[in-house]
Length: 127
Image (cartoon, rainbow, N blue to C red; front, side, top):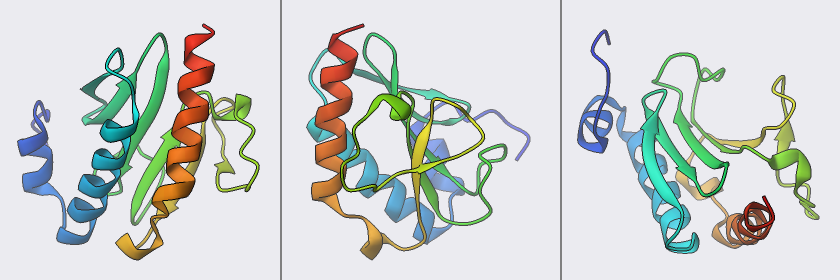
């Protein structure tokens, strides 16, 4: 994969089927639960959502430099500031980022993600 991915269609065309499905499901949850002022762009060749600051990233393992070997990562850029009462997210080498890696679409818990998205939006409004 030497060419830079510039569109979702390009991204989806190179993903293995399982990662494509998980990426699409996660994108739907995120886009349906972020307010209109939040935007999506491809950054580092993956879906990146931001408001006043970076909020959420969806990184399939098929895209290099994501730090995962399999599945799809859902990351919250300001994750260290989220309450995450249910301890849904993990910490990694990036100080701010908290994330969850999904190996199968059945692992995606929409309600948990909605709670975190709502909290991320409230946090973003304060910046």
